[in-house]
Length: 265
Ligand SMILES: Cc1cc2nc3c(=O)[nH]c(=O)nc-3n(C[C@H](O)[C@H](O)[C@H](O)COP(=O)(O)OP(=O)(O)OC[C@H]3O[C@@H](n4cnc5c(N)ncnc54)[C@H](O)[C@@H]3O)c2cc1C
Image 1 (cartoon, rainbow, N blue to C red):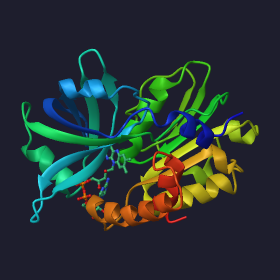
Image 2 (image 1 turned 90 degrees about the horizontal axis):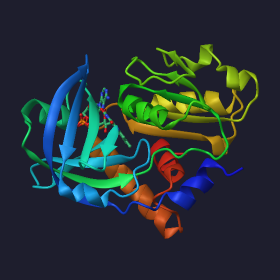
Image 3 (image 1 turned 180 degrees about the horizontal axis):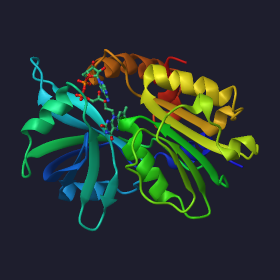
Image 4 (image 1 turned 45 degrees about the horizontal axis):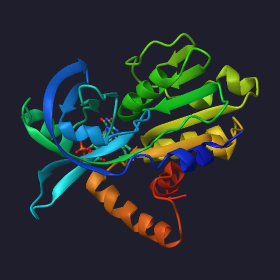
């Protein structure tokens, strides 16, 4: 059975990084604390191999240096026929993305950059545990959408903003230390995905590998933000990590590499 990493290495290169000028087609409140944004544009024809929970960057308002500020988001839905891409923004107190939301309107232009796989199904695995805060809810929802009824899913998230699935067990808390999914108790091979604030992710990751005994190759843990640091700060730190990894022959499309760099493993 392939590991998550082997699958990513085999299938993760289908999308070249994108750089697309798109138009904001729609914006609407999705639920308290979340805004849904739909982008459209002919350039989305270049997004040829969408996978659940792919992530991209938006170039938002320029800083004093004139450089655009990049903020990461997740493809919640993609309609290749109409070339429309939907993503959801979780609100927080202050930030470039929050400011952008307050000023942007349908018809405005925005640049989308990159496109990176954040999750790949491990071949043959039927049991999935998905753990995340508000910023990971769009990714978790997209992953659940991609899983057929033969799969079983345990989701630990702070909101019920998830699609229906016949075998979804939802816990509206991320207290993995006090609750063990049945797949883990039954010692079935389980694929686990975690994304949230960096310190929370390190804590959950340690529990999943230790108390739950999940194999290292079946876990992907990603820092989606770091307390006290802007996305610009974290990108600058990651860039150094990627430079070193590439020089050492690493694959920049491999989410496991992103995990090691983000979490400082
Ligand atoms: C691969 C990937 C995919 C992502 N997908 C999504 C997505 O689909 N939807 C989404 O909403 N977010 C997503 N995020 C998280 C998002 O990129 C960050 O939260 C980002 O910092 C938001 O930018 P900002 O301009 O609002 O805040 P920034 O300017 O980056 O930060 C300003 C301040 O707010 C703090 N902060 C940042 N995020 C949060 C938060 N969520 N809660 C509380 N404080 C925060 C920072 O530590 C900083 O102190 C994703 C991140 C990654 C890496």
